[in-house]
Image: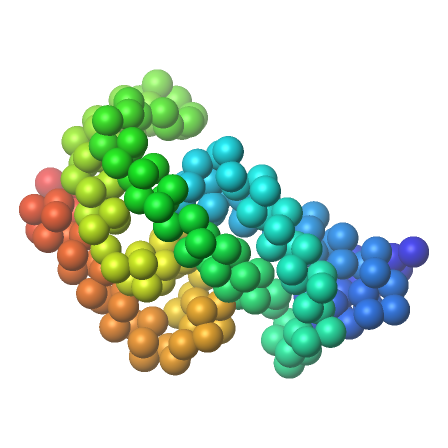
Length: 192
């Protein structure tokens, strides 16, 4: 049985507790499965997202004894596993971006005013953004989307992908430049 301190504890504590009490690992699933699902769903769509999140946790569970307990936060580790799984689905991801070029906007927003503003902004740049993301090299796209959709820091992305922070910065810079250029060197989120 999971003790209350482990539920509130650092991820590293949960991982180490799961070595003797495998059920402790379920708390990590509860903490991060929705976050991972949102990320992969944006990249590949909802259909494969559930399977990939499940596979991510199966791999993480199998490798939990190799987790570096010096890191309290397991998100970069989990996002790293998930990103490797996503890379196997690269063709599907590219197809999703091509589909986004043709698809209507389906955004969930709070108020009618927010809905109109979000719809106008998203519709105005959707095709260009989808095209720009599809055109990015996979390594640049992974970094850009882990930061934008995964909400990871540079250091966390570096850990997730097993690359130096400097490489994260250069890939992010290159990806942002290419996306910005595809959008006509404008940021649609900035008001004029």
